[in-house]
Each structure stands twice: as C-alpha cells, then as structure tokens.
Image 1 (tube, rainbow, N blue to C red):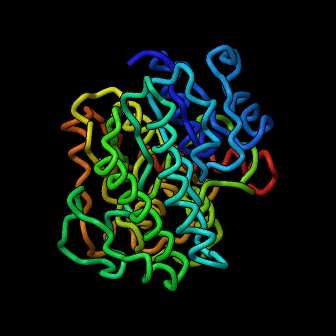
Image 2 (tube, rainbow, N blue to C red):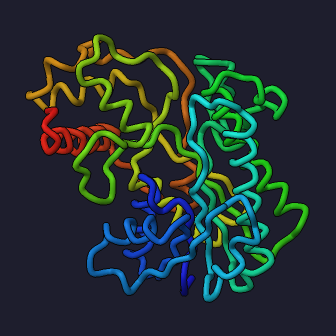
Length: 335
C-alpha cells in the first residue's frame, strides 16, 4: 500500500508508536487532531520528519462530516481514538455514545469521501473479547472467536470499568455491522490488545500523564501489595503498533480481528522490576516471586500466523517500561 495513511488518536501512547511504525514503513501520515496545537505536539516528537506529515483538524470525531476534507490522497486509515474513562459520571454520555459514534463516523467518512481507501484498521481491545463478569475463568483460552457479551442496556448502568470494557465491544461490533450492511470498497481489520506496556515512542520527562497501563506499573513503586489479577494478558506498545501496520498491509487481514498479547500477571512485573532495578527493589512489593494466579489464557498466535507478528519476551517489555518510568521520575525529582 502506498500513499498517505490517516490516523486518529496519534497523540496517544499507542498512537505515537504507530506513527513511528508508519514512518519506518515509508508512509506519509495525515494526523487527525482536535487542534493545530495537538497535531504539532505529536509531530514534534519526530524531529526532521515534518515533511512526512499533514494535518486534518477535526474538532468532533463523532461526526462523519467533520472529516469531509481529510481524505485527499489517503489510501488507508488507522483509527485508535476512543474514550478511556474508567470512572465516568454518565456511562452513556461519557463512554458508550462517544466510543460507538466515533467508530461509525470514521467508517462513514471513509465510505463517503475516502475513495482511495482500501483498508481501515481499528484499535479495539481485549476488553471486547473478555467476558469480564466471568472473572478469572480458570482453564479457559480466549481468542478472536470470543466476544464480551454485555449489552448496551447492561453497560449503561454497570460499574465504570465494566462499562468501559463493554464500550470497546459495542464499538467494535458496530464497525463490523457497518461494513456488513454498507459493503464499502475498503475492508476492515481490528486489533484487540490487553494491557499495553512497553515504551512511549519518545522520551517522557513526567509521570503525571502516563497511559492507564503504564500508570499501573508506576503505582507499584511504593505500593504495599502486588496488584490483584485483572487482565491476564499484555502486549508491547511496539508490537501493537506493528500489528496495526501489518494489518494495514496484509491482504489476509481483511475482515479479521486479532488478539495481540501474551500471558501476564502483575507478579511478573514485580519480579522483573525488583531484579532489574536495584534502586527501587525495596519500594516494590515482593509478593510471591514466580507465583502465577490461576486464570484464563490468552491466545495471540493468530497475529503471528496471519500477520507475521513477532512477540518479545514479556520480561523485556516490562523492563523497558520500568526503565522509561524511572527515567521520568529522575527528571521530575521523584525517583
């Protein structure tokens, strides 16, 4: 695939790594942002590459018409923007409607104005696969056939974290339904990672606005206990980015969803951090070294078979995560 790739959510943690991957693959990038300032900030993380970027200012990504002038020369779309709100005031207004409407808007816009677009890749989540109400589900193996079964009605009154998980499933289902019903010229692929760890694509100098996932690791420093089981899987930010670009390029990815991830427990993070970073060993809870809580398994092998994605050892991902967090702590004087 040649030409320009339009991307939403590029200023985020995963979005930055996707930008890096697109540039490495030789693409030009059309950044969708709510403001010039936001777009310029994202571009500034890639010094010397400004000529490879163009901007589309879209104040409201839930409105298809807001994208009308964004598709000139665009041959592919990567949609990563979605609300990540774990404590919403109103589940419907803060989570469900924005997630579904933004997902449908990008498809509607690509259908109407993206005449050269051949593939849309959307960032979904393991939350759209995992049946969160079944908790640890010992012995079960999740893969792409599975769906979070929560309905809109159930999600509208569910606890915040449960509603967030449901929003990912409802948004992804809405995208697949749209493609089925409207039969656009482009094909769709979705990427469904669990916790995303690993580094940002650029240096970080503060821990104040870490991604939710890296915030979980940061919060282990000074904690009294290892966090309990929640998502039993993780992926590296660089792997998630690679999966998006491979899904953009591979003909075999058309119409497919991909669980991108490997087994994870927070005890693994404690073990890695305590071994690799002596300066914080006494500030990270020891827990039960080597212990793996019984729970479900995640099968991320389809991404390897179909996309050719190669996974790093989870220990490498965790080590790189803590290294970047500790650097930021040193810069801000909280190490």
